[in-house]
Length: 283
Image (cartoon, rainbow, N blue to C red; front, side, top):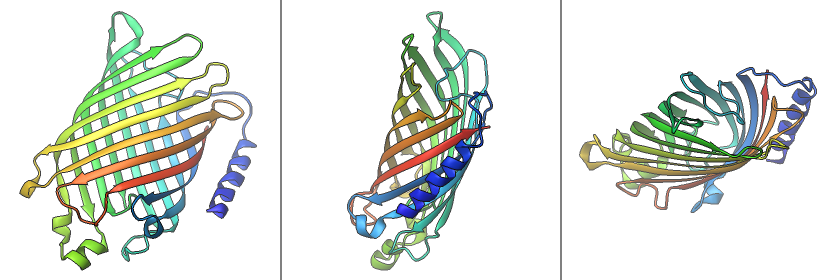
């Protein structure tokens, strides 16, 4: 992990040295990320470390707020390579990919306040071999979003999203198949449910440093065959630190993911921890 972090730091220093101190409004960015993840009940066998490269299109920079009747797209594609993958899964590849798409269009101000908006929201997340025990997973959401900004010098941004969602996950783990005789069809599940997200961001006006606390939950409540079910809770915390300007950002992140299904497939709680550091450069 030390070598991975060193590589990320060297790349960060190189990219930082290629930009001027001027800030642009370009939505296009690239990032380098280094991180690790592990299960709470099985840290020795499940510890995974790696580095990744992301391409980003973001119509809403991290310290901005939504404006009425504008279309906002936030797209992120990531390729991730692991130096250590899960030890007891022979089919787990070292490389993985994911795609995240967020669309939002504010259509109404609340109480004639331009900083309080109600929006149409669409989200999609697709992961291929990028979460442990998951071969493929996707989530699509349609709903409404409420975004409020408070403060004049320092800003607190509150975001709430409530929507209907479709979830699908394909599991490809050796242990349930070999030890319990459970087929891949039994491991996989797909269906519909409700999605809720709660976003909290506090930005210090003088330094531009932003503190982040996000929570999301999916409840699969209908459309699952054979009484299957799937629920997840995801808690994310972090900080965003501008470097030379707002075109060069350093992210520190930690994440807690708790996933539940109708049967215990792996013999312990499906609780995953992640930590990462990321450098983002806007062109």
